[in-house]
Length: 570
Image (cartoon, rainbow, N blue to C red):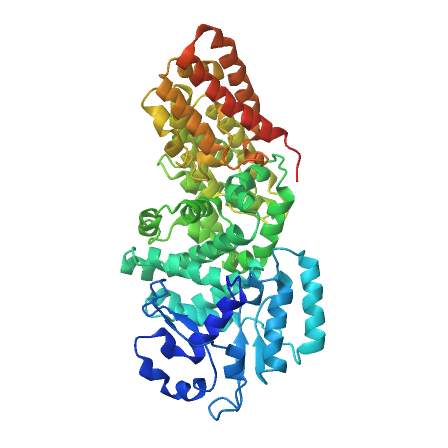
């Protein structure tokens, strides 16, 4: 019997009734003929729901006593009796009442009883957790004969999950199963339910891809699967916001920027470092991880994006060739290095990822004293990146360019590569300067709201940023707009539009929850919102009646937000 959600002893009695008296809960009472022989000697009464519809459709007019039936000396029940109570920690019944009830079956029902549950999570609605743990410990010492700690057999679980009929042939491969096991254990999150959901979601994505592409891109898909498992485990078990923001923040740290999350990010990197090295691939690669995060958190279908990626990977590129440089003889290495230099310096146009990745490789060869990198190579790549920056017309163009640079950059676990890192730092400085001259479409809409767009703000804020790292609903937004222009837009709205704007504020900052502290991610909104509030108050003198009421209502919403920002931490 599962105790999950039970809030009264009566509910447990009914659960037992269903097990030992199935006829009482079916339309075919003849199933219970044997039970009637016992029940005829014991008075009982129980309500019946014949079709599981939730309504009590009839009543058997006896005073049913579960313990009396189980403790009966009748032939059918007097022998070995085993009761298993599952989900102990999920019961809503007072722990003292629950344990006393279970103990009755041991002492008076002459039963063998097995209790299954996580004793570290025993809770009670009236008592503190520590008291409950002490009560259970006392009960365990006096009543429970033997205690067993259950350990998950992860390898068997992985095999069970992947061998389901609905699963792709790719997931059934032994090397894929082994990789799933290694990633899952590296995550340090021992939740097999989440792992199964991860594999099911990945499988749904696989079946949307071309079968031939899946077969030909097996190695890439193994890497992608590993990243998928990592993302699911970290989002479900760790600091969700840190991991979701990690793809972009990690690259900024590499470029020398400071971050309050540096230690947390380092901890996540350390968990998967050995596995990344064994695969010769950075499993936290931001290009794919940012998209996987978005897929998990918003439901965005990445199958089309991956399909395009697979088709572009089927031919071996020069970037792939250089990964095996250490296995070449001197002559072949010399030819490869010359080929890379010629490729970079040729007048032909290559992808940004290729330029960045190959420059990093030549820098690494300089660092290990195999070849001195020519300055012309660095100049060529910087010129290419400068040209690409100048061609960016929108914020999204810039973020896409930055993502290409990220994709071409290899995460290193050893000492810094000073030659290459200086180029990357230069690029991010140029990127930061360029981004200031561009504004996302969402910010343009927010800054210049009108009667039509004001009703769409709550929906628009759920869109992802141009870099696909997160949504506007998860970050500060008012620090990115001109508040004076925004104020003027609000003043030109109708009263209906202003009430829609107030509703947006209420929805965005969860004002209807009451008594909570403003989330840290919104703190940069406070100063511009305070400026907006003051601007609205200054203009109140020009409005009367309902016009004034609508402005006051917006001010009231902003006041609530400001109050939430001042609440002390719990």
